[in-house]
Amino acid sequence: MNIAVTQVTDITAISGLSNLVNLNLAETFIQDLKPYIFMDNNWTWVDLSRHSFCWQLDYIEYRHPVTNYTRPWGCDNSDNGNDYDGDGQANEVELWGLTDPFIDDYVAP
Image 1 (tube, rainbow, N blue to C red):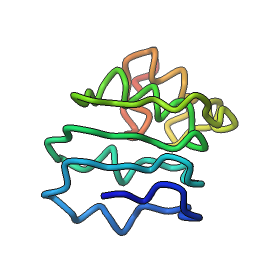
Image 2: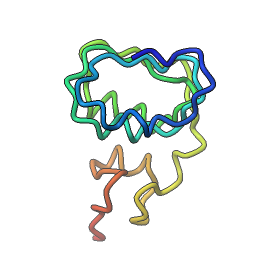
Image 3: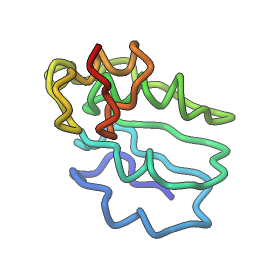
Image 4: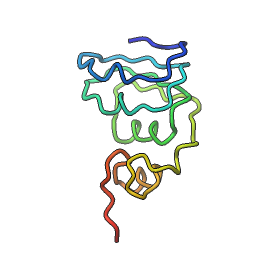
């Protein structure tokens, strides 16, 4: 699916496309990649938006591997310190601490 070079800001509508294997979101205004991340597809090629949240791009790169993944040359780091899942831990801290920033799975020491 090619959505590149559009004014698209939300990809929630693609979450039900289970046969999708290629996705081009380059040069869009999509920040939140959660719909893509939670799709259980056999991705072969993905090109993502440089406006996406940095921590989500890191999540994809290290925990959601794709055969042919093109990481954007830039990203939006404004959400790194926020807490997407509401468990009290910043997104970036969870990503590198091996808890899941999408799921409230933090266990206090």
